[in-house]
Length: 516
Image 1 (tube, one colour):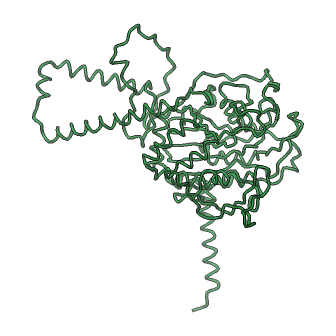
Image 2 (cartoon, rainbow, N blue to C red):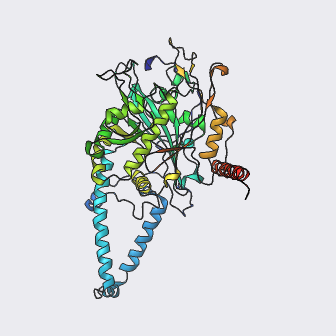
């Protein structure tokens, strides 16, 4: 692997129009107003009243399972604040008569109202304290973050942003041959695209193999792989933007936010679950264990070391073996089978999260603070979490698939490396069809010609196409193949096929039935 300093970056590459710190938030149901233009921030006064400076930030009120939290300066919230101020002014202007009206008897209705207000104040006090604590440890500007997403054209378009949010979950790992472990030697070895739609109550995820070929040797240190863009792209400050730009060009999928997770955290995360007792995962097949040099590991009695098929409670080290395995019987497709195994982990994780206690959540907070970074506002994180964990997304609407790829690895020689790396070629037409079916509005398909999908080598050597293999995330921690969203074309085809098979079976039974 070439050192970062030895790259030759093509400075003639067209620069994108961008706006620093661009973010996007959900708009509640029923709101159709356009986003307010940016306004200059007024200068701070020389002295500020002590009461104002001491006031903590407020969490948005209302039912968080119905709306995603908006920034405090959102136009609709400013309007409501002005309305409240006017109402308070009118009431206070009522003089003595208004004061006398407020001194009625303590009727049952007033007692109930007072109790409700007191309870609400206590809840806000507690959640406000949790908000301040979590927002302090999840500082997006902290060292180790992926920077900001500054290119506004890669964000979700306004007509979809009212109910939809799109984000990348990236698992960061250090390069095997890195001389030192630092932010400049990290690769995105897990790339998971997530599209959450509040109105449709769907969560759709797309796995992107780490070896997917994107070319761009100047931005990938000569490897041509998508996982190298994070460290070797042109923007050394906003590293995730390097990946988002190419991701958007390749798939025409918007990205509003990102979440990065250092893979070193995996063991510590899992060993925190269940009070340290481990994490229950369904293993779809026997997983044989190999050491770092690729040699098979054996037990003391000479039997092969393995993770056996079935439900298993795994500690962090064992789960890491399961998630990284891509060698041995049943894993002949290497990285494709590894990604399929990871779906069982995601399904088990969703199952666990929906039953997690508050004390377990709090035990995870310090681990998250050390290993997780995001540019997502903390209020949006909380609102999304509450909506998801509160059952706002039915299990049958949680779907995951993989970018369709050709089955054979191809050696890429265009990067100028002494040892040509092996890459995987994206299947262009199949990918366009998949994205139009699952990740785009039905009335806004994108033609394959609009996707910037690169290829290398002789097409005859690519092998057959390995399809997306869409799956449902079951509430029981299982993964159901052949997933399709209710009402989608794939779902209708499945219903038609099932009806045809049923009719054929009934016909065959009628023919074979003996005469009365």
